[in-house]
Every structure is written in structure tokens, then in C-alpha cells.
Length: 187
Image 1: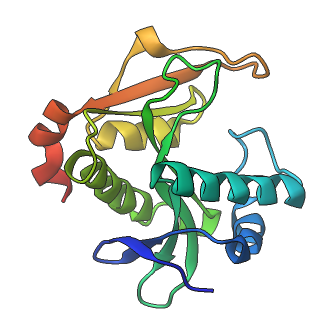
Image 2: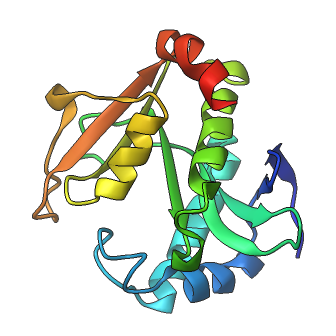
């Protein structure tokens, strides 16, 4: 079931996806608490579609929201990584987006920040990325708090509401210049 390790940090490995990991995502991250700002708990079929989409992102762009595991025991924690925004309603269509999702019993342990800092490094140092965005809804205070702690800035001009959503998305941005300024604090 193991796949390729893309990024390693002190405590974590970020791996490529395969279909075998879909059950882990559904079991650990498809809960009311984890999904409360993401449209609520979804069917196992929806999560299987998401894994297919993550694999497509990986194949088409060589980036995705990579599977996150703890090094010490290979425990599945969730995902963190980079994608190309494909939402046609988005103001950042085609941009590189950083995102994460952790199982609820792993919240507050610094895993998301550790993984996201490594993903920002990957975006700016190993790709031709000049700008990375992150999107969430305003009510998701934890996510935009992490965006701020990563040195990202809220760009009000990019906020939008997707057709099928009721709550607007807020968009945070980090440029290569921002990364040069903040990377020593994060890594």
C-alpha cells in the first residue's frame, strides 16, 4: 500500500495517493467535526471521487494534497499539499493552492503547520511558483489562522462566492517575496 514519499519533515511524510488510501481518508477525515466547514459529512462514494481527483492532480500537475503520515508509526493523519485550482467560479482559477485536512484527534499538535510550511517550501523552491493561494470560508477560523501563521495575507479582492455555496470563500496569498521573508521562521 505504500506510495512515493514526496516531502519529509521532522515528524511527517507526505506521500502520493493510490486508491488503497481512500478508505483511510473516508474513515478518519469524513467526520462531522472535520467536515463542518466543507459541506458536512459525505458519502463514501464522494470520498472515493475525491481520491480519484487527488490522483488526477498528481498525474496532471505532479502536485496534489498529499497523504500525510506520522513517521514514528506510519499513522495516517490526513493530507496536506498543493493543487491547481479547478473551480470555475473561483477568482484564482489555475493558481497553485495550498490546503490541508487532518483527522480531528490530530488537531492542535502542530502537524498541519509543519506539513504546510514544507509544502510552501516545495512550491517556491522546487516548482516555478511565484504565488500560492489558500481558500476557506470565513467561519473556518482555524484554517485562516494557520494561513496567517504561515505568513499568508488575506486578499479581499479575491474573495468570492461559488454558485453552489452559500458562504463566501476568503482567499489568502503568499508570494515568492513573502516566502523569502518568512521561510527562516517556518523551517
